[in-house]
Length: 234
Picture 1 (spheres, rainbow, N blue to C red):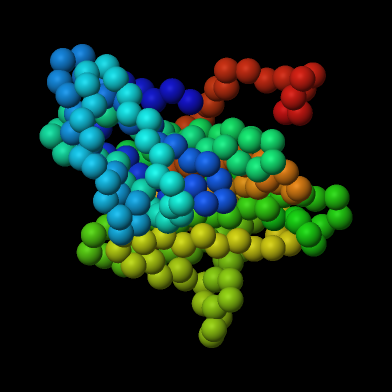
Picture 2: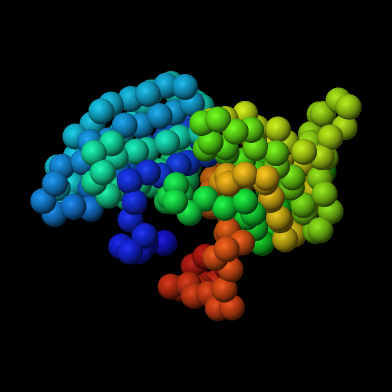
């Protein structure tokens, strides 16, 4: 969806970046009509830039052989920007684009409508789903819990078993629960953070990612631009 002009800011985050198993680009648009934007891109512990983006222009940037996260895109000279990440994935180059999450809208709770990692446990199911949890804090550890169908989930492969993800400053985790299908999904933290859900299908690795809906932005009405089940399966 388009990003509202009254929510423009100087910093956006993404949970992940991947040009090893996928083909990922970062797009950074300068929303000013008169000022150049000076932009840095941080992927995990790596920093790129600064990049200078002319007024009303967009930077399209790809970093070869890089897989890491989270991703921080920041305008260091105070000029408002808008950022997205688009990805080509799998044997058919499936396309997905996700808008960056603005740093001034971080929340402590996010929701998703559904979770589906039926493959390979459920017959005729080709869905594989990861929940990505990012901690943008430079100094605080985030303690995060995930509820699916109202049930608190165990951290995969934790020993001893734990129900809390401990995420260091500037880090992220990417859990999945193989064989689990249900919803809604509630993700809650003791400090502001951000979350997305990444879905891959089998066998073509078609890909989709969308950011969680923050609790503070819940509403009673939502709109979509189109619905159809003739040429697509909605």
